[in-house]
Length: 310
Image (cartoon, rainbow, N blue to C red):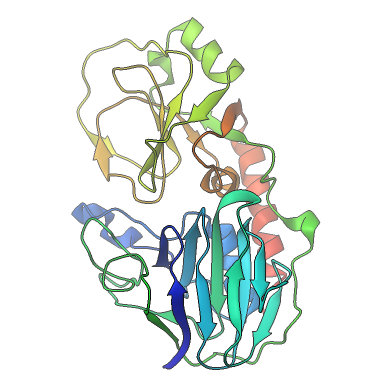
């Protein structure tokens, strides 16, 4: 383990994340992990890591970091205008940094979350087989909290030598700018009235400021539901719930493990990276798709990522 980065400014909400704790859901622990798993995995593959290695997830405002030891990094996800020693650097590309180099971000250009991977994988506190930061439980990552000034970030031994300037072609990125989320019908779609179902697919919704890693509250047309109260049932990231107030909630990485609101739709896995890059105030629409099309899009994204594996 080697100290590689020192936090000069932490950004708005920068945490250590890996692929989370799916095995702990049955015990009532949210799965957590990186919100944009495509970007997280791409960053890791670009520097020669396994997909499960931990990275830094930066939200809306990126951190300022000073290099403690020479390292290879990659920055993916939202474009926060990354700079090394004040000069712009490419995203979705492996970059070699020297001691005392300074990594900073000029401001948010697009997206909501950027990812920084370091060859060898970032090392954090492990809880329930994951280094992902769980803020509510104050476990994992950097002592269960976001990064703060003065934190020193360590990395493990790189598993294999990786070269600088490896890149993912722009045409292989998810359609981040579209803001149209593809869904399949949920188990309780029949509880929507005909007008509500039409409104769900034909109207735009806006991500509320009252949104976080647990889920997005979506402002838009009132969706009327019917039927008796429901017993709680298991939930997954990407589920679209409609509570009594009629405004949908899109569940994300830190979602509760069970709930009783009707689930009227579920995002396909290929749309989850796009959802992860939505910020408060962004407009979003839903488009119904088939399971066959969803599987085809998932396979395409997996193939794009596999093209980066060393």
